Image 1 (cartoon, rainbow, N blue to C red):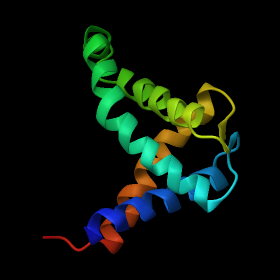
Image 2: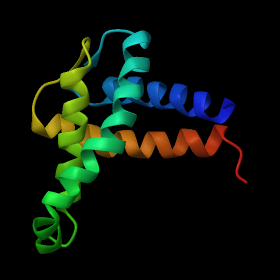
Image 3: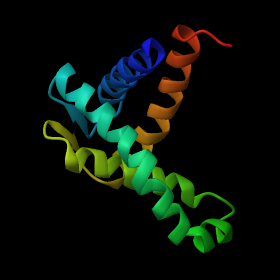
Length: 115
């Protein structure tokens, strides 16, 4: 349970760092980042597999590069469903989703013990 809460908080911190680095992404407060982290988890668990299934031929055709577009779409959906979290366009969503995954991975590797 502690690992789940720590991952949730680290994802919120990663969202704030991503919004600070990428122009075109803004988060109103840490509370909004916490809510966005929950919505991100739900979108990644429910919506993203459905999108992946329907775009599988395009993903295969582009040799997997379309997954970056799916990540940007999922990231934009999080901003759409979270008041106080804004993304201004496709390219900030694309760069933000890439940077968020990098920052999240680094923070999780630093703070969550490996088993």
